[in-house]
Image (cartoon, rainbow, N blue to C red):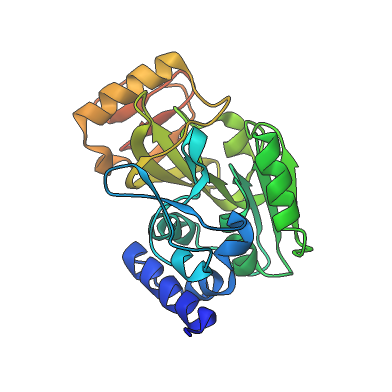
Length: 279
């Protein structure tokens, strides 16, 4: 009989190694959180290499500790997220004990719990989930964390200010002003930007005084973010993704300026640019 805690530790080390994460606290957080507590009773359905679902042989939780997508709601093709990839995104937030974090798109709360482990009891984690059923499940799953609060509703407004970190776990077409304004000085926002086909890139945005640094940290395919999609921005993003060169992104500008060669994706009140600009 395999020791589940040992299996969970191996899973955590592999997921974080895949992510290129170097923070041992992230490994500890993945090892501490039981995935089966959040995904409900088994057997469970995993996404196969052919994009179909296959059921685990039994309800033994050992089957959950692989770097594979597991269904939350197979009928809607809602999945719990790929552990190695989510480890990369959470690692990019560089969470520290005592920090205030918001998680938009909390799902059933599994990755919210990992962030709660990282900030510790001296921190605060605010989960937000638009799907009412998932929000109820997440609230119940996370009830044992006194420093975690889960609310239902759209994540267009994260509901809190002075955030050290904000993780948008769904695809937007552009950064919303409410997300940027919610960041404390030095606050970090990890944001998937996706086109019509649900594929795109993830950007990390960091508040620096009155401006914002930005960088592309990878590619992504993800469920769309309710209330954070604009048809014109979606088309412009699709063109920018076809063009490529997202590695040149260095700043998010909020000052009004003419579109230029340094603009990777230019919106009415925001611009992902190679050049810095005032917020």
